[in-house]
Amino acid sequence: MHVDIITAVPELLRSPLEHSIIKRASDKGLLQINVIQLRDYGLGIHQQIDDYQFGGGAGMVMMCEPLDNCITDLKTRTTYDQVIFMTPDGQKFNQKMSNRLSCFGNLLIICGHYKGIDHRIREMHVTMEVSIGDFVLSGGELAAAVLVDAIGRLIPGVLNDETSALTDSFQDDLLAPPVYTRPAEYKGYKVPEILLSGHERKINEWRYEESVRITMERRPDLMDS
Ligand code: ADE
Image (cartoon, rainbow, N blue to C red; front, side, top):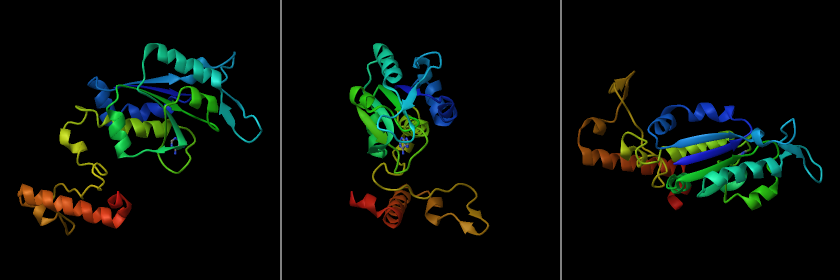
């Protein structure tokens, strides 16, 4: 998968995308992430990318021209399956969307800053608008990092144990069961007996029952769906 990310603050993306599983995916050649500095397409000697909003009101708006020039330039090299704008008024991100996006070959992600981006860019170029939750971040970068992390780990070959993504929370509308490692007893707290039994079928049953119990307790809304 190839992901291009347009941002005015590349530093915000570097660290989250250069470690752990996402780094491994890049090293294996399964995920290629290219961060594009929007300011390189900025206007004039100050490389301006934002301006006051028409109609008044606090906060700057990211201008059409730098974004349009940047996106148009990228499109001469890549045909994108989706052009995604990270925004709190977008469709709420979830595991199903993550699964769907992980099947694509080429994604372009636009990170907004300030008050947002000129609406015409959304009309001209954006095919999907995604929110990572009902709260407002200071920019789309951290949201984009969340999206790429969630998608990247689903690309076949990225995780060592291929099945481990399948047992993640939300993968079948259930939260994951509790997990334990050695020692079997710590400060009087014991690992459930069944997990030490070696009885695979019973262990799987226990995990499933725990998943259902925890989901009913914490997220009954997931069970409704
Ligand atoms: N940009 C600012 N807040 C955001 C959010 N909640 N989700 C996606 N992008 C954002």
